Length: 78
Image (spheres, rainbow, N blue to C red):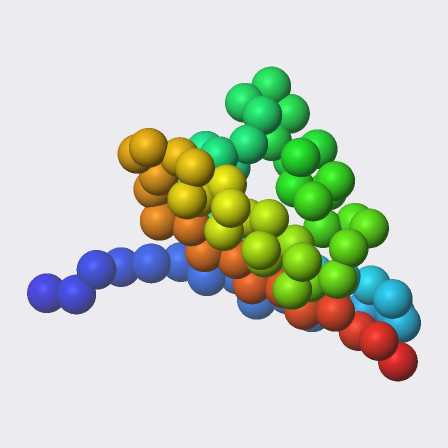
């Protein structure tokens, strides 16, 4: 017997310069517990995606009991 899951499909129109970030909850465990989404915004807002990923890797390496950390970044340049 397979596991049942529900998915909701969505369409997002990205404008040039927009960035879409999707992460596992493991990333949120590494951030400020009072404002984890604010930390995510600060990490990804002003830097190139590769630099943001390096920041996340540094946080994961420094954590003693890090959960899995998955980050997907999609940026529209033009």
